[in-house]
Length: 305
Image 1 (cartoon, rainbow, N blue to C red):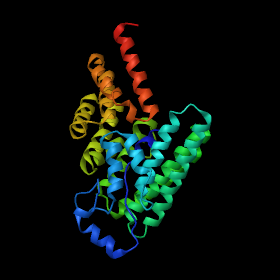
Image 2 (cartoon, rainbow, N blue to C red):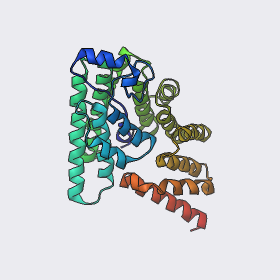
Image 3 (cartoon, one colour):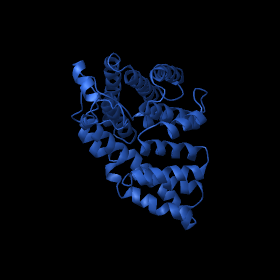
Image 4 (cartoon, rainbow, N blue to C red):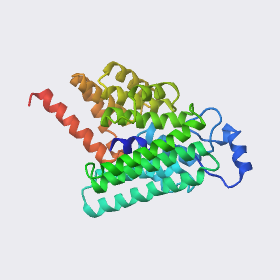
């Protein structure tokens, strides 16, 4: 599901001593917050490294290795682990392994919610933000186990619950860059892919353009949104900004190739598909296989078959 793929991104750490928490928040040198340049949250170096591996480098293998020793008080870490398990589940053909990955996804989705619940007292904005993430991950589990047709009522219930948590976070700080990254991504995915009245593409784009951070993730989201809205010039501008900031991410090369294909600029897409496939070993199998399938179709069209 689109909402599962894109939601995996954003987080913080619940510390036992209030004094230590305040000390770290006051000192940017001690924080590794990938979202904020002022008033950073005390996100661990390990979590920031996993975040950058996944979203800046597109290296899921490296991110999974880092997350194998994840901070037990970090909701972002569990959300990222859930995302990787779900993507691996999508690409797995062995029934036993597929079920194991689904169970892994569910466990990390549950843990995202549990840790977010504990965070509500010390950081209600981020606590609510990751309660929302947990609700969306629940929707992904329902879709995987019940199907997107039979599970529609429960999936919509999870989405409504998620929006309730996001609204609570927004009442605390409507300009928070992490909140606007997550909510902007969710809104844009729902508006462009599912046509649900819960979200507006215009509002989502404004969030991603104006207040979301980090920029290389926000610009990627904008490129996807503009691509799906068939505003290809704006999509190309956004993906070029993302690539300039994160040039080693194969998923960004793939996204730019997709935009070229939708513009019928097939020849220009070829080197980008090839660049993405050169790093397929670091991608989830489902993603690598999808890139290969789309590249094969482009080659067939270019050869006239």
